[in-house]
Structure formats: structure tokens, C-alpha cells
Length: 76
Image (cartoon, rainbow, N blue to C red; front, side):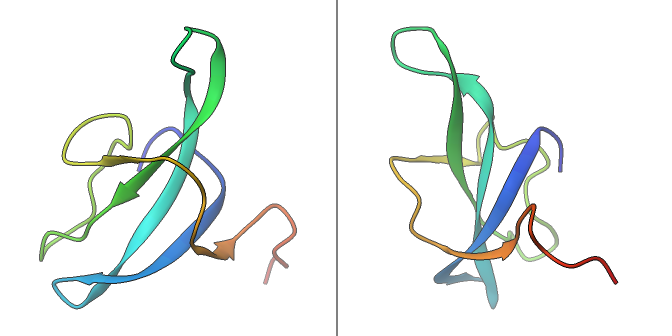
């Protein structure tokens, strides 16, 4: 995936047996100012979308998922 900012969150909804992901990326607020934007990324049976700013990614109004990858995640 491109444009991804941490955290990455997992959603309770499944698409083709895989959890949907909540991805944040740098975009614009409705008034045109820079802002972090959230998108739902659904697994299509082969892969997740590559770009959270373009369809088939779907905009999300607010964060709801469980964080699975964050700036505080330990590195192994």
C-alpha cells in the first residue's frame, strides 16, 4: 500500500474471509486544508487496494478499529 500513516487498524468486518483495514493517509479536509484522512480497505479475494485515496477504498468518518500497527509497536 502507498500513502499509509500509522496507526493501521483492523475492523471487525470481513471481506472474503479477511478483516477490513482502517488506513490513515495525508489528504485534505473538506475546506481544503491538509489533514489525516481515514479509508476502509476491503480484501477482494486476492489483495487489498494499493492506494487508500482512490476507489475501491472507502472514506471513513472516524476511527473505529483496533490498532494493530502503531508508532509504539515493538520492532522484532
